[in-house]
Length: 247
Image (cartoon, rainbow, N blue to C red; front, side):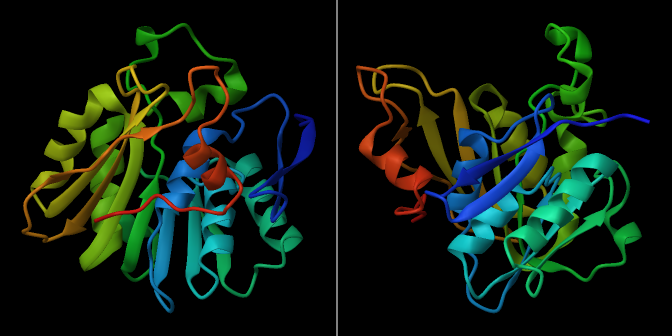
């Protein structure tokens, strides 16, 4: 029996309590940006694929107080933490987490289509492309079924006119646009740069299923000032005082 050491951390300036594995993948800026990029309306339903212990799921739910959220997670330990964290934050009335694998057809979950879907897919498809992560982090770093499977799952999970929002490596932008483009459009892309003069390392991409509007490239989000501290915008996002805006 594996014994997992858990820490309790705070997100959104203390608005969210998060219990997460001390030795596994831990929530960081990517989860914060994904949560801040959720623009679902009151009364809508949002799915997060690969929710882990619930960092982005719970932060998005706290930001969107009249929206329902469902997390999907295949790892039993992470799923258990997500469910514990939902209860810990008194969000069980409109947030839940279910067992599921993005490598399987969405219909196997038995859930009706959502209004929006979010994901921070693992950044690598090939385990040989990077130095092997710690075993507890492998699932968060390596997409067993590839990025294409994640994008197909997200598209299947939303109704026509629903939105799909992902954060991923900037050098996979073409793959994201290609993977979503057969069934989605109205793309908006926001580069995420570590510094103002540095190339983007991440991209936030938002698409509408069956959307037809032209692609919009938005101004970059810069995370740090020249001294290395968080930029004012990044700090406001981390504290829950600002969102990632879309056009």
